Amino acid sequence: MPDVRAFLNNYAAYLFWVVAAVWVAIGVEGGSVLMAWPVVACALSGLLLKFRPAWKITFSWAASTAVLGLLISAYQVYAWVPLLAGDFSVLAASALGLFAVLAVVHLFLLYAGAVKPLQTQAR
Image 1 (spheres, helix red, strand yellow):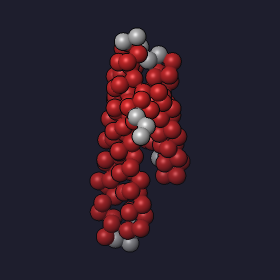
Image 2 (cartoon, rainbow, N blue to C red):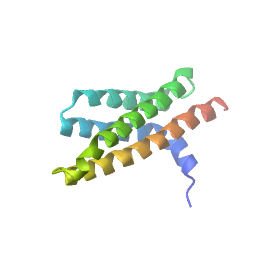
Image 3 (cartoon, rainbow, N blue to C red):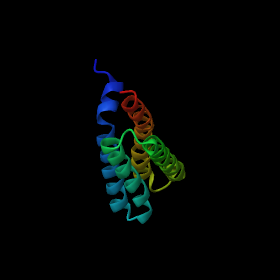
Image 4 (cartoon, rainbow, N blue to C red):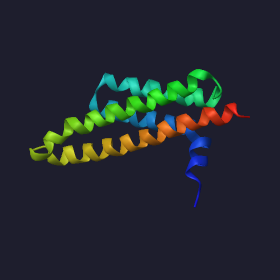
């Protein structure tokens, strides 16, 4: 079985960029300019992890980005729950699933962002 930790260490920057692309799609589909915050944060985290992993700010920025995405996803789950019983139950269920998965992905990003800079500094 492949080592998840090694995968997250090697591809943390790319994972942040993929999540930024997901947030772009959510922002475009929802028409919300507020979704630009996680896009910019994830893209910058990916850049920092790729090109400057030993900087002191890289760990803080990546962890903050992951927490930001986790909080936004958790809030979206909270906001969609009341709509499960109404006319928008199908839309609410799919949105809940999407944002629940995105919240778990941000937990993985939190771990990936925390591990990458520490191993780079040890070299």
